[in-house]
Image (cartoon, rainbow, N blue to C red):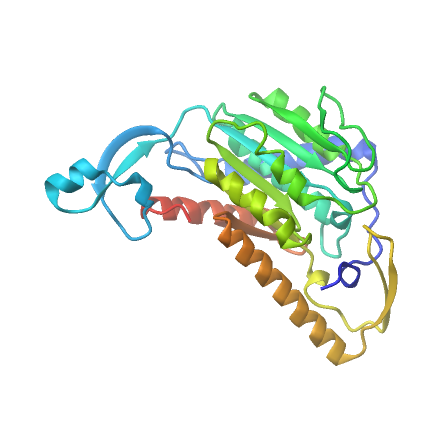
Length: 331
């Protein structure tokens, strides 16, 4: 499906001086909804198996065979897996796609606002346990510019900028990270999601959680392999941001649409029901291909929409992860 068919003229974004107030309201909303969700067991947004050895239990369908406890299995003649205790200091990395296709939205939010909101929720769930969180941010214009390091302020603007925000612990540092994310200027031109994900692979880091937030509209062959490579060492969560107009077209007559990454303009006759049907079928096929690529990479998949309560969807996802963990699976 062509990008131009999915994107109309961008919605006006909030003024820069409102970013602090927006972030404050956003974090208050996240705190109220998520604080009561993870009481008790030490867990995060994507609870992993940890690394410290714990007790054994009988194998259940869906358990990771790499955690088989062979000595106990041999003694009892019944398959057992070794449970592990979560590390008390984990490291979470965010890969945030803020390319030009994210500067669009026809629902309650712009897609870029959902990216910032998801980053705020994940940051809250990470730092509440004293863990470290860092981020890499990619904007449009390609990936030819060298990666730059964050020094406490908004990331530098420019085409093809890839910015790394070092992993730190503490609420003050988390606030600075979110301000840097919210202050990132979206640049025209195509981004490189594969290069953004690859930044989490270099340099190699201790096992942790990697979260990739994007609309994943880039060709799957561009980012699928780096994502599979990332999954070798980390638990990976892919958050897909979707706008309803990327799934179906309304019947509004002649609709001018523009691809923000190339600037190409088209006029679409949306009164044609066959065109709308073909568009919906192409969009469904595209999303199915994205889901298949994420599944093939071994990543957990969470879809957030601009016309829905993204926080409620995230709460349900966390609850489902906790339920799966109690049944012996992590997906």
